[in-house]
Structure formats: structure tokens, C-alpha cells
Image 1 (cartoon, rainbow, N blue to C red):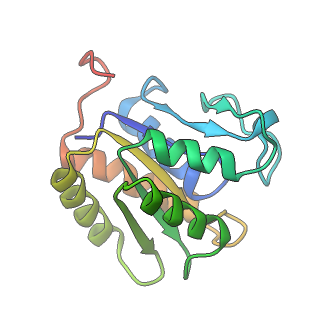
Image 2: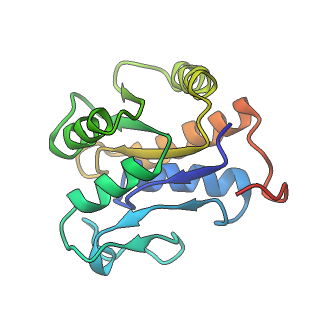
Length: 167
């Protein structure tokens, strides 16, 4: 059962994952992850409402690696085939023997994705979920779509409420 959601904080799928968790839990106590130095993102510094730890590196790969390593599994949302950053996420998940799922949101419905993630979380007994994927600039609307899917997944799996003392 998911107790924590992490991501790299990039605008798009990453922030959508964090937003969905915030919507579900009502606060930021159960979200986190790693981001590049100076909170670097495509749209400028990552807002401080997302409590992310900064790597010492300015580049994206070190934070991608830390998030994959520290999570129990990773879900990747793209608006088409895997591209550079998402390909790296898959490569790192495979290298570290971490389960992952990839969804091209142009080929699935949100309800199909929620059901798939819920089954996968149960099968692998995941506690910490890393959310990764495309940037908003390459897939407009992905942040909002991902937020809805992550929120609905947490509802579906019966994730613990924020006051349960877990995490």
C-alpha cells in the first residue's frame, strides 16, 4: 500500500504525481523526492510547496537515479513513446531491479491506468511510489491528468490517511 509519493519535481508528470498525493492526503507530509541543484526545472525553480531535496548536481540524471533507487517502484506517464529522460528512468529501474510501469496516456483511459496501478501496487507490495514521465511542454495537460490518476489510485488502494502515523 502506498505510504509516500516521490518525484523529481519537473513540470508535468512529476508534479502531477505530487499534486495528486497532496490532494489525497491534504498536506505534504507524505511527498518528497530529489530534484536538481537550485530546484532546477523547465519552468524555473521548483516551487517550495514541493518538499524536495536538492542534489549537488545541476543535471537531471542524478535526481532520476536517486528517486528510482529510493522508491519501491516507478510509474512513468508519457504522451507517446519513451524519450530521453523516461528511457533513463526505465534503464535505471531495470539496473536496480525495481518494478516499473509505463503508460502512454494517448492510448489508455485514466480508469484503466488506475486499475493497472492498483493491481501492480498490490502485486509488488509497494510503499514508496516514484512518479516520472514527460514534461508539460511536450504533453500539455499531463500534470493535471497525472494528479487525477494518482489521487484516484490512492483512493482505490485505500492508502492510509495522513493521520495514521505511517511514514
